[in-house]
Length: 350
Image 1: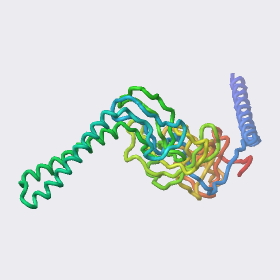
Image 2: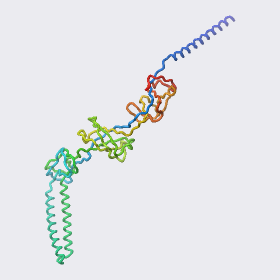
Image 3: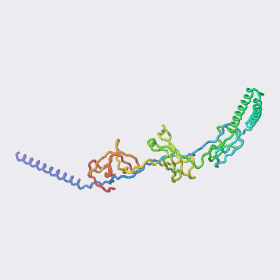
């Protein structure tokens, strides 16, 4: 029995020694395997200052600098039309004339009455010098003369309302009437627009409203061409639109081209400011989180996770406004495999 117990103890000692031996060498093998496993390499860039031009692109539309729908002030029959479609006319040119013979007859009657009263007034002034007429009769004649003059001015005003004249130098559009037509004040006769002078209307988001001031230069292209045209901001609306939260801007077009047509759609390019010391990094280097944005920065050869603030975003780069400085090395690839404090090995550094 005693001998059996001794053999059992020897077996247990041998088994324990075997387990210890196996565990020691497996741990050594794991550590060796870990050391022999090649480390994943990452790409990185060294932060350098660069020039950043803050530009935005918005849509706009061209408008005639002056544009008017031509309409008559009173109803009547058209007796004369001078609306040369697509042609230039000078300010004050008679474009449409309505029937006014009844008004002309009334005017002639009043002018005849005025001439008679003026002759009477002249004779009465001579009689008044020799007391041949009372002062009251003389003044009544003068009052009648003034009344007739006022009636004549009213009649001339009514006659002028039968005429439609060009309000400014411009080009006539397509006419909508013919001689003999009965028109009312709501009838559109034609349109007139200034020639060779256009304005550009566009909207910018509220956050850029303080950046645009009168005199600022802008460039734009038409929807059917890549050619750049110039314009100068002339005024801004004095309030943000409640529905769109945009500010309306108006500019005067400086370019002159047949491609520029009133009502045309444009793409407006605004150059707001320029920063020659901007810190720009590839957008893929940013690790977005719920409340923060993270960059992996190399510090003493190890990965360090840094919270940063971003600014202007371009197509493939983004501005970092806080968190890094010139000379920092930023990891741009293999971000998902790195942990805080991991040793870094680079495949390329730009």
